[in-house]
Image 1: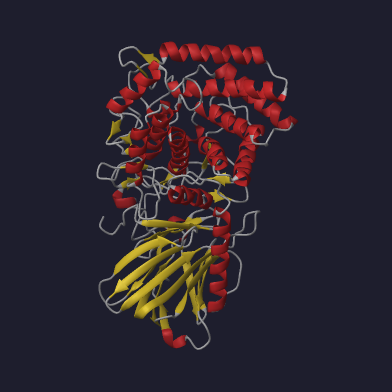
Image 2: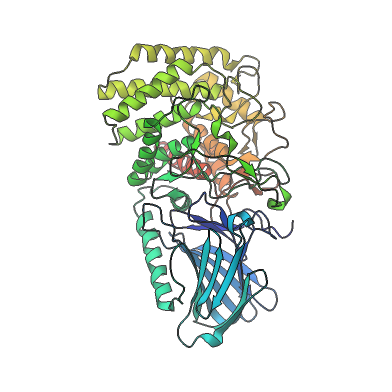
Length: 611
């Protein structure tokens, strides 16, 4: 287990079609290509022996490493400090320009000596298709080619003529490449890893530096479009860049995380594949991106959502929308396990695909229609076909809102009448009514209004626990659920309502610990899975938003500031925080960074109003 770095000890780089994780010791231990949801090339994050990696580090003794992003970019710098000098690895991926989905992707690793002299050791060990595809390695003076039956990885050396004396490399019997590179102060060389079609030739140093400058310019130009100028701007900008890194440019879809099977509890079975696009995440993203002024990205996500709405299928058991899709909009997410991989710190099974895709989760309809409503109010009004599809969706909600479901947390313990699902059905109907009225579109508004009002009455009667004096998770329990922190946000109840104030206090007594928030108590409300989990970072930031909306600004600000201390050294968050402060779950997680942005925007606005 000591061979595994902490989940938080990583930075993220990407090219808007795929992404890689780089640990603080300079190891690329997760990279899937050509897409986020493709099989892995490097997967040591989930099995240090059989997963595959690219390692680069100083030779000859101990060293100290530091890691940072080049400001306002997704260019990652890992620094090494030794008694003989200071060196750096600069990792980045030039932005993929083929918006139809390019199979050629490049991971550039510039290695340079800043002070003194330094010898770097390289260890390249690809493992195609989660280690299931064998390969052969061909070496030349310009680089190496690792060629499998279906995949190919070219490694081009970054060097100039006459550099042969600076390094040496060899291929071992497994096809892995090991070598050394000796540099003096001011020298920079390195590697370029390429997938897809191409030729093997060395890359001049000047060409690598040109790619670096182009990538730096892309990211600095992009983040300069952000209109947010409030408090915590650096954290908001880093969250925005992280969300951009997790966006698949050809379709505008946002993956929940670029990783799979990182555990919610070390040694447990809650290890899911998050390399897909949830309707819920995409819906929240539209609002968050618009709040920062990123209208193009919000429009692309809204179009992706609208396409899913327009192509809705008639599936009587799970509804017209799937809860998640692949980034291209397809829905083949068959779940399987990788028994030959140990899992992160022996957390098995290692799952790829996602079996929750076929669940019925009623809340996604409210989230989708709410985000489309927000998009429409920002100039992205639907055409005729789009409105007909949305009308069909609202009709389905009006007819099906009362059935049990699996709920927002994708529990595998059976369907229930989840209060949050009912709440978001109310939102779906409410937003449908608003759009029909504001745009003068034909719709059965009397039917919709009757269903909406029936949901309101049912939540107030059956969703309310008289014993707990709070809204509850579902109708057959008195367990609380932090998803209901969104009740005032969506306009179902006012932040000052005594029923909401009582609910917030009850949540604080049961779900909040030192400002961190649990989703629910799985011991009191079994979810069909073994083990426990950490506090849910999304819920903590939503707690901040709820406090700010309720006027508890001092508590909201202190909670927000404390939550910022749980970010990793780069400002990134996974899904959960463990009891020791360790980050758990897939990393980085879009939901967490979306909620951070919403909390910062809301809290900053309310603080300005008070001032």
